[in-house]
Amino acid sequence: MPLDTLLITDAGAVRTVTMNRPDALNALSMAMMDDLADAFLDAAVDDSVKVVVLTGAGRAFSAGADLSEMGGPPKQQRHGLNGMIEAIIDFPKPLLVAVNGLGVGYGATVCGLADYVVMADTARLRAPFSALGITAELASTATFPRLMGHQRASWFLLAAEWMQATECVEAGLAAEVVPAEGLAARVAERATMLAALPLASLVTTKRLLRAPHLDAMKASVRAENRALAELTGAEANREALAAFIEKRPPDFTGL
Image (cartoon, rainbow, N blue to C red; front, top):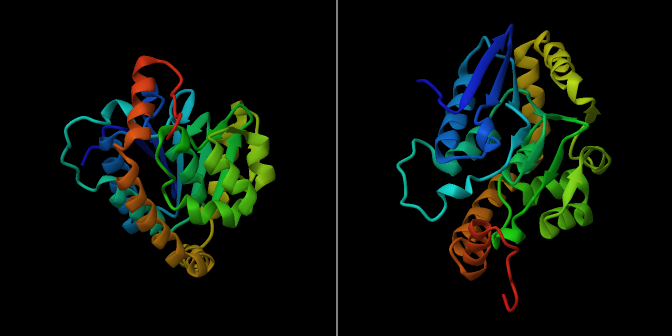
C-alpha cells in the first residue's frame, strides 16, 4: 500500500521513515496518522528490518496536529490517532528519532516513545496543548516525568514554552545534539551499529526495558484520549482555533 505522506527508504537492516509534508511542516494529518501506523506495523513484522529511524523532510520535524483539519467533517481512517499511537508504543524493535527541525505537539511527544533521540542543534520542541485549550497526548504524561523528572515535565507540558535542543538533552528528553548538517550521518551511524547486532537480542532487551512502564504508558494514552475528547471543541479550544485562523493571540480570560 503506497504511503502518500511518508518517504520510506532502507539501507541494509535500517529503515528510515521520513514524514514528507514539508510544505505543511510535516503536520500530522489524518492521512499521515494512518500511514505512520502502517509503516510501524509493517516494519514490526519485516524480518529484514532491525532498526527504524523516524525523521522529517524539510526544515521541520513535525508541526504537530494539522489544525486545518480540525472542526471539519470526520474522515474515514484506517487506524486513526489511537491506532498510530498503539503501533508506535508496541513497536518491538529499536526506534531512533532524528529531530531535524521544530517539533510541536506530536513532534515533541513522540520523542518520549523513542529508544534514542538525536536532535539537530537548530531544532527545538514545544508542547502547545494548554495554549490550544486541550491536553497532552502520546503517553507524554507518563513518559515525560520518567525521562525529565516531575517538575521539568510539568512545566514543559503546562506552559507551552519552547525547549531548545541543548535543554532537551540536559532534561533527558534527547540523548545527543549534533550540528544540523551532521544529523543524518550521526543517526545513520547509531542505527547501523544497532543493526549489526542480533535482532532477537535487540527485541528482547527493548521488551525488558519497557516492561515496567508499558502498562502505565497505555493507561496514560487512554486517560489522555478521554480528556482530549472532553476538551476538544470546548470554549477554550474554540477560542484557540479562532485565534489561529484570525492570526491573533487567544484570549483565555475567564476560561
